[in-house]
Image (tube, one colour):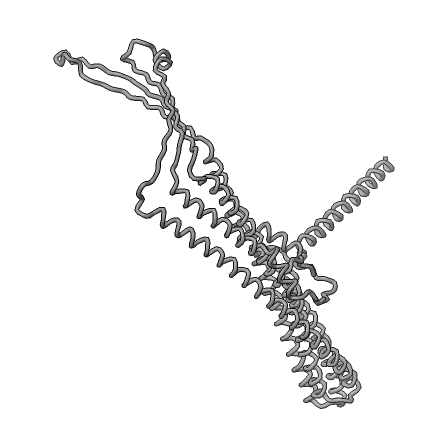
Length: 450
């Protein structure tokens, strides 16, 4: 009996242990999954914005509305069909008013009518062509909106990377300053250094701690800016995926090649080109108002009255009648409305040419500015790298000299400040060069990649 009880206890213990392992594994997996969901790469940010950004969504809704206009224009080429039914109840006094009698009647009429446009100066065909072009232009507008969001997200994403590098840098500075201050405290107590040198190192530690707080605040603001672009809720757990390395590779594409590529494939150019063609069809539609309009009309009708001897079905069948005819209309005088509309359409067509040239000019200027920024930021990065290398070497030597007591704290802090300034300039130059190269490549059609 006792042995059976022990076996049952062992079995229960084994089951509890296995269940604990299962639950622990599930919790760990869930935690890892949540952590993975909270980490956002630049590719994920861009894909999310394309689907959820309100500006992009608004552009897509505008495209859908124009697609409905196209469907309506196509449907106008087909005949319509209208059904009309009228029921009437009448009541009148009989001839014998003294008797107080009256007669009542019930009647109904039913009509099917259809109209079909045979000729209208090719208005319907031109309207369909115009609406089709407007749909294509709206599609390019969606792509242009996406491109603007992509550039904003890329800049905000790189700003976070810069902020995180600053945080890491100042964290190391604070740790180094703390160690130096502790070492200086020991030397001061031993009488090896003056109190002023210890105070200067303590002051530098406070300055580095302030820099760390400021860098942390900048990182927090940069994350908020990117979440705002992505339109994530405030309570969303959001972390970016930090690249292992962030090398700036200069783009040696000539300005002429980049400009030609941009003018061929950028959506804002395609949208303006399509809009110019659509304006031409609007002019043709207005010219069609000068031409005659020919419509085929057809109708089928019947009626019923209870005052007649036949029943309802017989009357409906007997009273059916149909009519088919052609209607030709032509405006002889329209108070100059047609001429004015044609003139306005011509002006709009010329304006679309101006808009296209203006879009091309703006894009060419943007590409040239991106090219200049790429050259300038690369030159600044090279100079900042050389300055950093020199100051880093001097700072490293100064740290060793301070440890050995070969220089004073003042001399050391001079070298440290030069190193801090060089590092700040380098980090900012690296960020500026990276975003400039990405923008220049993006204008000529290359995807954003870190």
